[in-house]
Amino acid sequence: MTQDDALRTQRDMVGSIVGKIRHDSFGTGPLAELRRMDPRQATPGPPTLHRLLARYVADERLHGDGMQRWTLLIHLLALAAPDGFRGESSLGRGLFTAGYKEGRLTRLLEAPATDFPVLLPRMLRFVVAKGGGVDAQELAQLVLSGGDDRARRRIAQEYYRAEAAQPQAA
Image (cartoon, rainbow, N blue to C red):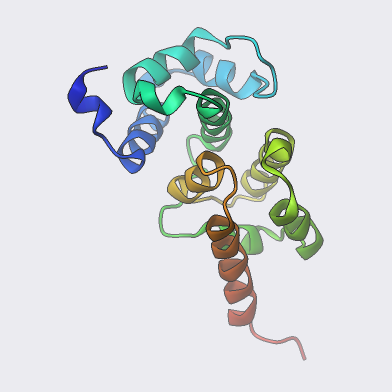
């Protein structure tokens, strides 16, 4: 990775990864590798993961728990690819639209970041199975920040805004 690459923003890095795995030339084999990997494992992971990290993620972003967070994010992006990205829909709105129950949302928002490798893939599989999508950048903010309060609050706000926009049942 060159010095120019190191200056790229998180948004740029995530956008590049999404663009790569959504493209037809990425192939079903590498996508399947990323979907099958277990982000909880301390093992190095498949070559496809390391190829994406080497090409698109600045080395300084991988220090500390950065490697685990980026591994989880790439796993989630693979689960959503190719059609599970909806840039115009926030994560909270996508959850509400997919029928994600309030109790599940509460568990997700109250969970420690250490539970994300289990909870987030389940959540994403649910949304994609219902034909929904997520905003990759918002998902990245949640994962890479370690679930900071601002990211969680935004998801909750958008979920309840979507709920409020629904016509009331008679």
